[in-house]
Image (cartoon, rainbow, N blue to C red; front, top):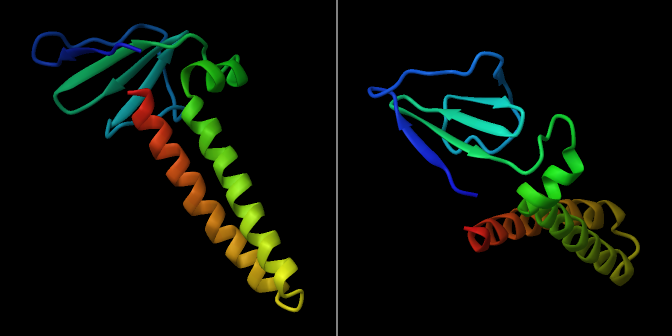
Length: 124
């Protein structure tokens, strides 16, 4: 996905009908907008613009698969990592159910985030 930078001092613009959104990685932007498949990020000094294959507002599953697979990989990493650690600890010592659940949640956060970051770097 190729992004185009538009310096604000050259051109102050916003498409009529573009809607502010919370969907998407802000990458440090002040605001984000969507206009169909067009994703616009507004920074202090510039705009960045790129086209997604799918609009997440109308087709979130395809958007995740094609435009943001790192999110799905992060979720898969969280589910697999957390469940493996939690079930391992539970099966090892069945009297520590709370510890198994807590450890599984922590492992889920760590493995999910690590999976997301690695897959995002590989995507770039």
